[in-house]
Image (cartoon, rainbow over all chains, first blue to last red; front, side, top):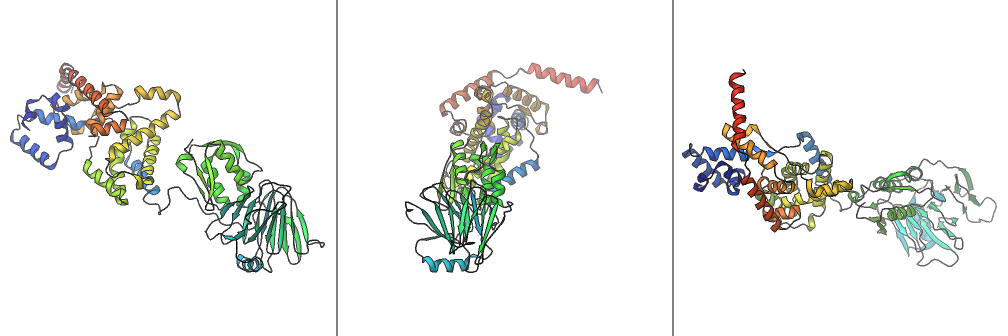
Length: 347
Length: 203
């Protein structure tokens, strides 16, 4: 302590050791300082003035009210410690499964039905056996990329059987439950979905199919493009139908009934609004897509939060949109474990 | 500017990385004001500063499995915030890039009167604050980190992304300048006289 008494106030203010004793003393130092200044009050005046100056001179603060600070800190905790344990990338929200959705991409077809999956599973497995089926046991839709570039969005509890290789003249898939398909156009190889006892034939479109139970009905809805559906004995009158955009067909044992579709489902809403515009915020777009398709899309929102694109995705499949968007923002994506994973270093 | 007990920060940091969430919250609560005030030296937009601090803590949280628990957290967090702000500021504005190099640090030192109990220390404090405000940007930042945040040479180097040697050099230069440029007491004596007259003849 003594040597501090030989210094001027100016020297003390700039003295590193003295500053430390004033600002961050060990308990021993604090005690020693108090003892010295109590014992030599007159001689300590300079020390005390310097100590005060050290404490009093500080940066002009930009005011941050207690409330603002508490809110800001709360927000950090909401995103960290108060989060249920989760993986690094954020998962998106569930979307209430829309039955009988209408598809709005280039050509849309939806096969939905009133009865639920269990009977259809029994029905289908008697037909095909269990071998080769891919089943979605997750709570949300899972996406599967096919070798021809098509995608299947498999609803929870549903299963598809996909051949290792498509035939040269056709692409055939079997379905139990519900799935949404985005099919790459290929006129030489029509795409067939066998679900229950209905067959849906498309050339290139996106559609979903729900396999009916034995007495179930199947609803096929087409947004754009053309799709044909048929029941067994499809060559007989009334056992097959072509569905054009805006129509939906309800297939049952009695035959096929056509009606107008209502487009007020999540996927249609998404495709009509989210994918067109001057300043599409990528994060918002992905969140909407994830909700509309009830699909997990992994990405780092902090990386993408400043990404904006101008796009007109009308008439494009979801996977095409994702592809185009990733190109636009210089990101990459892959389909992995039934979800879409987007990797970006930010914009 | 608060001075933190390094010890407690380091132990909180360690225990957070080992999986203690309470330690994380304590650390955030403890460091937040300092980070915010530090951030204010680089930007006048408090919302942006808060966002950047949030990003810094989110990144820390998400990469906690890979963080080194034996590094001192303060310089790490300061450096992350500085980087984050730098990115934000220069991204939005090309001109800011040049500006960042020279005039980026806008600290203003003041005297907190509540801490003052005597004329002598008031006078000394005013001169000290005026002195610090005369430092150029980079020196001011180093002095702040050294004198007010109590960071070591290496920690300052890590924060500012310069070499420890250049921290030493700049710090030495700053100290010499500070020592040689104390505003003379004449001015403050004049101020003192003014106050004296004010008190005694104008009431």
